[in-house]
Length: 140
Image 1 (tube, rainbow, N blue to C red):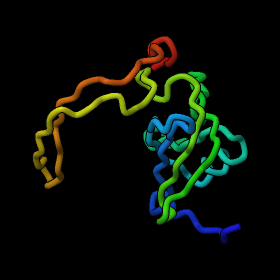
Image 2: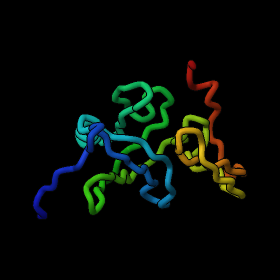
Image 3: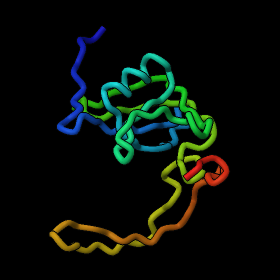
Image 4: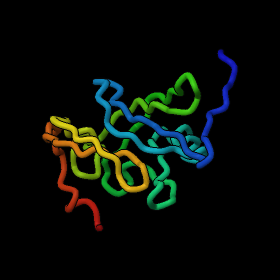
């Protein structure tokens, strides 16, 4: 058994986590994980993340029923990013798509916004599968 390592949750207390279908290798989503979310994921075997917009811990699929059973959690070489290998029930994306990465970029127009930050406008094409109607699932 390898020695333990400390996951680097950075200044904001979060690390990015990529959710990947354990069987097919399809990348499903990217979310953020707090130490508590990682602990809950490990304890329950169900993916937990931290919502930056809502400032709270959340269990994937608690509202929609589209859960992620976690088969394995990996940590990258720098110990600052996680990979959740999951069995995805239904869609991973809140838009109703199987994966959050359901658009392909056909063209890019890079520019510099006010304040010096860079932006890019992209021309996209939907290529992913929609597996549920989000309006029927979420009360927004």
